[in-house]
Length: 71
Image (cartoon, rainbow, N blue to C red; front, top):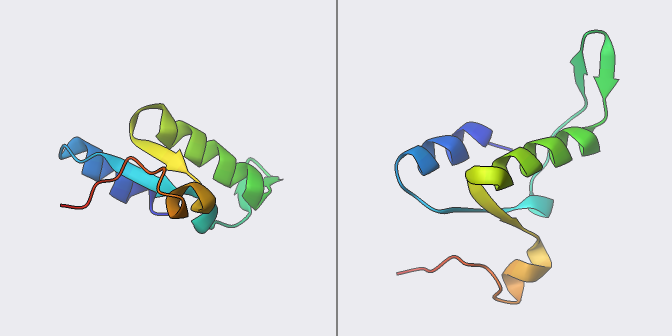
């Protein structure tokens, strides 16, 4: 997942939509503890969805539920 891309895009005035289940990460370590990839993914997506982006899944995107408009 390219978190910095979403943060920078929002800072430049773009409205971002992330397809959460189309992103991937890996297990991460902090203070000697391994955090499973799924928990890392959920944490980052929830933080991004608070202010920086809308997070949807692939099914929602394909159904046209996305707030994204292509001009």
